[in-house]
Image (cartoon, rainbow, N blue to C red; front, side, top):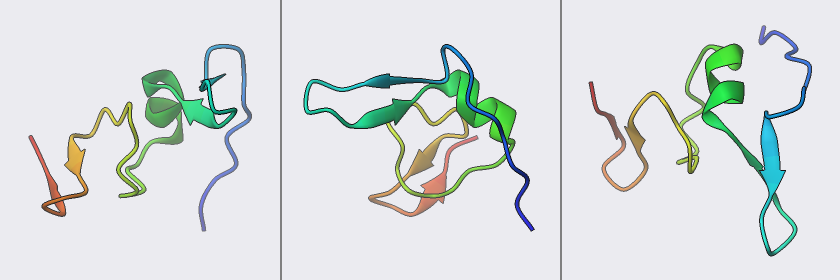
Length: 54
């Protein structure tokens, strides 16, 4: 079961299109990669190749 991570200041920003974009800070607090190809993924996941860079 995935843990609930409360959203705090600095965890996301709104893109010009109005979408919520999570920051590296949030991803690190969450503690795992969701493999969605997030813009600020600190885990190095590449959605095109489906691999994690170390």
